[in-house]
Length: 83
Picture 1: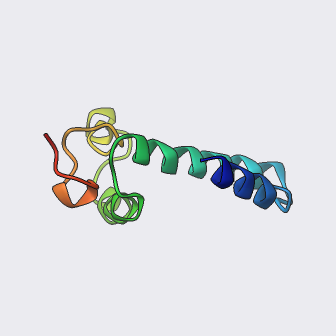
Picture 2: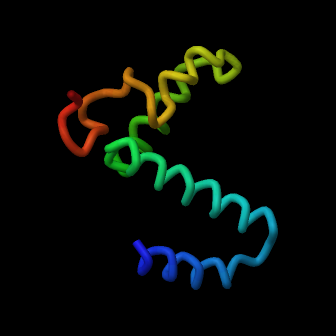
């Protein structure tokens, strides 16, 4: 974990704007949250980006189903089987 943190810290040295740094930090946080919830980040983001176009983003209940901790995510987004 330390190596990944050091690597990302070096990458952030080249962020040119505050907004770019905030976006990078938000994405890094979301990726780490997927890992903590036993999700494959690639499969989760693939599912997220392909599915969010089909729902009303103002519907908070619908959005809850797409959060990394949701129990409604498809099986292929998990690193191992759900228990």
